[in-house]
Image (cartoon, rainbow, N blue to C red; front, side, top):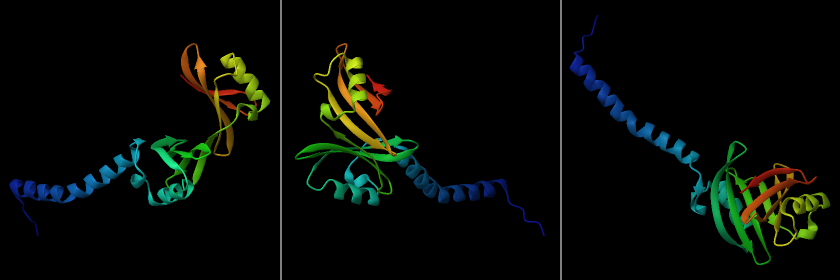
Length: 167
């Protein structure tokens, strides 16, 4: 038994099928695009596990900003918080895991090798803002300062090796 379908009927059936599938495809596409979007977000836009972690971590502090970023091949939320006695920055994975943190430290608390490298780079130890970071088990030191009249952030490992700079 053979079924014959006219070209106009076939076109109509294909159009009906595509119309029925379009909302599902659009929703899936929109979700994928949303996951790739980076930049400033609100607490409510975080995944529930990440939001819970942030609410617990920031108790007693004020959230200054939340940015959704790509770090080491995965989405993380960079959360900057001011507490009464310090400033902190947390990197929180979508599942709520703390994958990195950064806090300001006194210049005198830098390892000697980092102080030497910093003074060589900037030519001074005055007017610099150091912070200590831990990400994926690695300790780094970020120094914010001015070099050649421009704001610069440099990152050293604990041996004083320069591993990054942002001008």
